[in-house]
Amino acid sequence: MSSTQSAPAANADPQELRKFEALAARFWDAHGEFRPLHQLNPVRSLFIAGHATLEGARVLDVGCGGGLLAESLARAGARVTAVDLAPGMIEVARLHAAESALSIDYRVVAAEELAAAGTTGFDVVTCMEMLEHVPEPARMLATLAGLMRPGGTLFVSTLNRNLKSFMLAIVGAEYLLKLLPRGTHEYERLIRPAELARWARSAGLTLEALSGIALNPLTGRAALTADVDVNYLACFARP
Image 1 (cartoon, rainbow, N blue to C red):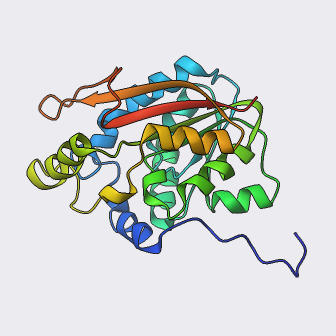
Image 2: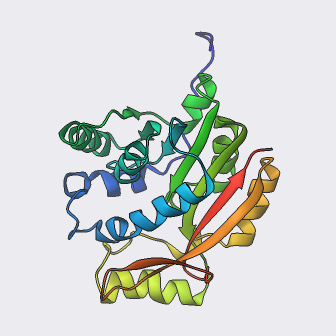
């Protein structure tokens, strides 16, 4: 990029970043505000491993938070680069990886900056619970597609937008059971699978697999399911 060109604008909401930055120090508390992520992570990792080869793969985790998924991918043999725009989260992620003797390339950088700098060609790109927090999710999906190599795989997790998801993921999880801080999700930002698939097609991707995730709040057990009404995972391929 020449000195006369400005850096690409990050597709991020400053208010959302501040929200997660404030919680960074408690990210690895499996019984705290991020408990649902700790419960969902094994299932997400299983879904990814079932649709992509991770051993020796070059993997990018976008919106990595404190590094929960990034560490699972690294333990599976992947060479992981993980990025987030919340400096506190990256600091926590680096410290935890060091304690766990894991080599992960953590960076405070936007996905758009990586693409503009030519940091592309990843075998696998992951983006978990982030699309519903950015101003332009369709543009973010296009950015993620551009970071993949031809033949690469993209994994996305997000929340469906319907009455059931509103009642369970927002009213139930945030207000009644208090599994998540209030205001974690905004209903209008949730994404229907058909919308996600349409944005992916526009970005040159094909939908390979779609799976719901069922999380029992009483037992803390999560499982893959055919029901995508609330939490769901999608696997896309770049031909």
